[in-house]
Length: 326
Image (cartoon, rainbow, N blue to C red; front, top):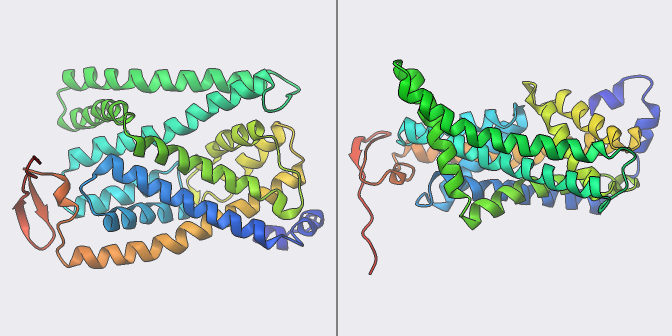
């Protein structure tokens, strides 16, 4: 955003930012909050339903803050979450396989909607592309990605069984078990709703940033595909994804026929919300969580019933097994 203000030659872009409509911008903020809430929902469903909602929310929002400050395909937030869970007493192997499952499930929403958006675009249901390949290629790529992820689980398990190196065995086992857990968790409504909501609410934030500045909203299929493809720019390890993610989204929107200035205005406004909202709610959540962990709470460790775990300040503790009801 600072570049728009300071760099010469961007006067038309600066003019486009004038007169932003507050109701649309407030709607964007609300949608981003719903996206963060969906992330918490799928986080709790994957890692531990016995964890309190307060702890689940604080960890999930802390991960969102990390993702907003260091966008590397979500790896920054997952690394922070793994560190918090490990400090809380959860076993490393359990964290590893569920982190793999969580990554796959949240990625599956992107890939699944990539296929659906490509089909809608190629068939003309949502718009009339000048080149049918712009819809067909994402379909092929998405189906291939799903097949690759499923086969990776079996391959990792086979390689792990034949490996003689303990570290390699642990990594390959985590991948194989994580893929298996991800497939099993697809039966959970919370996982499906959370994964889809996390992505779709974020797409909606980008969408409202077009009418917020008086620009036409792109067709839904175009918006969806451009968002998913443009997110690949976030894999560049830059603070907040600044540069990589912005250019990826703008380039993808232009590829699908959106006016360059309209795309740039919407993406920069969207990125401002994506940086500010998760950080504003996630950093206080992280501070609160750290204070509670220092008070020797065993909330996270309760996710390993029957196991002996190390709880901060208490040492090794045998976690109780919940009694069956009835």
